Image (cartoon, rainbow, N blue to C red; front, side):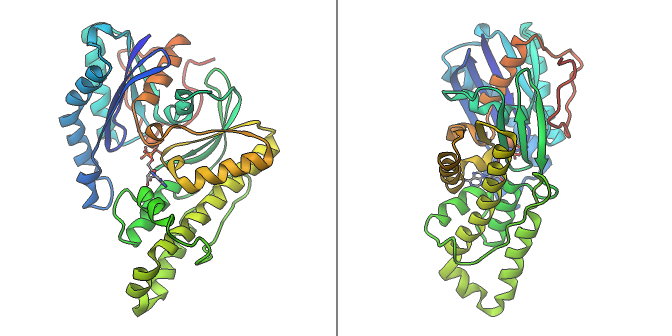
Length: 340
Ligand code: ATP
Ligand code: FE
């Protein structure tokens, strides 16, 4: 099956072509530079830029895959969760494109895209697996079973881990998005420089707003010394903050793997690109004896290859969207309607 995937849920305009499990193209036009001066995504700017970019990005994905629209068997598109105006551009384009070419259309939950992004690499995790979704908007521990069965074991009660990275990066004048910048600087810093709090809630729920606030208070309490301390120790502060996030995430994964008897563990979403998190989970896997699966770098942050992959799986299971498919900005990870 040759499938075109389209992803416009936030600020990346993305299109990809998959032939069966093989990624033939994966085009991402990031709007990060456009939003950087505002310190975060401006929804109206995001949708207007998706509108500007969607046609050239799809054309590029077809060209890179060395195919034309005539070669396609289906179209998969993200219909939620995400920013309404952004989702609308991708879905409207995909509907018109599929309709015009008489192709089946399938709507994909963006979070399912992240869950199954590990299937784009080999070996894919056997079901069931325990999956930590760590992205800009979500921090969830999910048990992924066969046939699109997902049970959410725990989730953040406030900020997502990626959001904490972005907000702390802003406090440290590192720009947007903050995760990659903190990751880079932290490599040169001392994770033991400052002891930021590691908060764990009952069960497998997370909370990162306290950690973010403690970085804010730490910087505020430096008073007049703040600029000097930042000049000498920005990398140390990054490393210390990052270590606190990694300790919390890896601690929860280890507990959940032990308590649920999971033998296969995946980490997905933008924060799964974090080098310290990747190293720590590999080490935990060695010690605890579970297999770990992480997406290749190209599939950690938002991309359309993961949307095409999840879409192909749904089509193979007989799910396709009707003509009235609408965006669902607050869509969650539950069993999709009509799945038995
Ligand atoms: P969601 O998937 O929850 O809707 P999103 O699509 O905006 O949110 P992703 O694109 O999956 O999120 O991930 C983006 C997040 O990942 C940002 O918060 C970014 O700072 C973070 N991130 C990216 N690379 C790294 C890294 N190397 N270290 C830490 N965080 C990172
Ligand atoms: Fe995402």
